Length: 598
Image 1: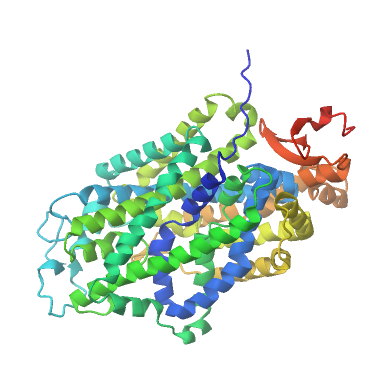
Image 2: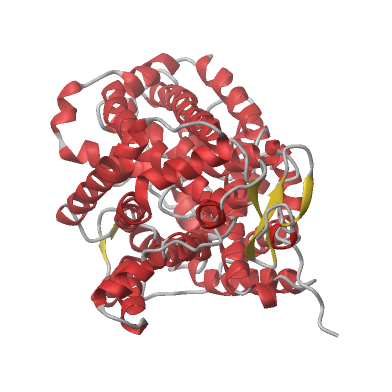
């Protein structure tokens, strides 16, 4: 006997949705990327292009993607298929970027878990030289006179740097020298996958409970690190470097490009993850208000994290007798070199490294939950007849986890860091996201219709969106996104590892293949749909530009509302069905409701 399909899930409470989105957008980039970009690109002056990008691109796309998910009650691909079949390639490109993201993100979590475990040792292994992996050029800052001035020369490296490069990664001479798998990292990677699997295997009814801890506790850790950082000597010098405005830098196009990239990266737009999270909302959830508060929280977290980071960097610079500019790092360099080195100079260094790496682990796990749920949900909505049957989801989640784990083994070899940066630089690049975001806003603004999107939001929230959103979806967002994409391409520089290692030609070709796999998917899928459709070109375009008539507003326009009935959508077996709901109580399906005469 064929087993029935399960109903599509919804959040048990609005709090679960808010915490999950918070965990998604407040991630590693808020801690290790935004503060460095702010310092590097004019301090407080960097906030000008950053905030402009938030208003023109970040918030409009955040609201758009959340609303699309809530309106269609579908995953990334099927939501675009329902909204605008011609733009289905946008959803497929976003799904591909999510897969690339989930592959590299968990490797970062494996590194973080490795450092977290070693933080419990009585002697931190990155705090001193004299270990088997250290070289004669190793310098131990914890042994130096505090009043002395130490300057790193080209032949000198810190103990933290050597631990990262020679102990953790055991970096080979190039991407051609794969080397062996780092078994400690493999165990950490396996542990991270096990955590993620058992948190999302049953869907959002499990992961929605986990985020009560994983999305809130990082703020406790951030507060602890902030208070500790501000009480360190040299902290205010670091904060001065972080925020001191340099308006002249605003004349540099690179500053604006990096501000835009950070907004797209931090607000998780152009990837489709917000669409998936919104799809689990009830139809009448006020996603309009939610988007404002969540974007505000994201921006404030990035800003406050900068104080925690640069207060510690200011302390480390004072201890070493150098400028903050010489110790400032971003990305893995900050997390796995600069902060561990700074913590080693503090009293009770184990306490601060445990707090820091536990915070990073929780921030990363939250984001990984959403990346995985985005992929799983999208495939489930594409193949509901198979994946929405009892226990089939668990099997598919296991298959996805094992597949990614096997791929990631190449990223934790001695040459794995080269592969990691290749995927990060090309497959998950800002150029890909900017290109997808351009077509996303064009499809809604001009094909589905910005007015119709406004009507959908009003129908769901009973609030009329600000006219600025209509202007952004039609004009400002696609123009700014396209302009940023063009700047990215014009300013393109081939990837170099550590600023000196040049990849072989085949590696660059592989990188561009990953980048183009998502970029070309957008137009090629639309062209393919046109080619396989019937009728004249005008007729094909007209049909492919029409939204699914089962969507709530389309249903209302087709059948109307009678006797004060209000239409809402529920999801059964992966398809949007329409249900009549009276003002007082729910009644049976509209197709069987005698009052509606449908």
